[in-house]
Every structure is written in structure tokens, then in C-alpha cells.
Amino acid sequence: MFRFQSRIQWTLACLESVVRVARALALAAVAAAQQPDGREIMRRSVRANDENWNRARSYTFLERVEEQQLNSAGQVKSRSVKI
Image (cartoon, rainbow, N blue to C red; front, side, top):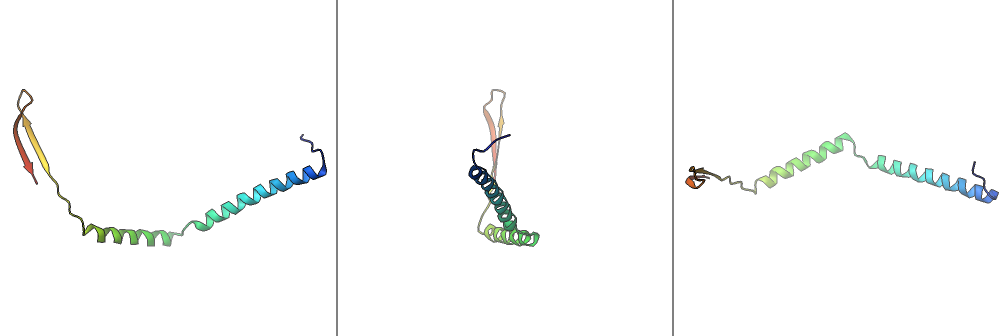
């Protein structure tokens, strides 16, 4: 068992332990308070989805497919490009 040299050291050690526990409880309370409820999560999701749809109108997607047929020597025999 660890022995303290004085009652003051023992008191300080106990206070440090209490402070550590209080900090841990405070951090846990802050973390729990910051978690949004289910409705808030859905509200954010719907808002983000709406923003994505509105932004998608500004974008254009162009797909290009290029096919090459090779001969037995590995050289390009024919090429077709589809846009």
C-alpha cells in the first residue's frame, strides 16, 4: 500500500482524483449534449439532398467510350469512338 508522508499529501492526492473524475464526467456530458436527435439528422440529410439536386442542374456529364481492335501483332486495326 502506498503511504503518504503527510496528511496534506494524502488530501492533495484525493483532490486530484476527484478533479480527474469531474473532468471525465464533464467531457461525457458535453459529448452527450452535442449529439443531435434523429429528427435533426433527418432535417440535415433532406437539406443536403436538396442542395445536391440543385447543384446537379449546373453540371454536365459527358461520357466517351473508345474501343480499339488489335491485330495479331498488337497494333490498332480499327478504332471506334462513341460520345
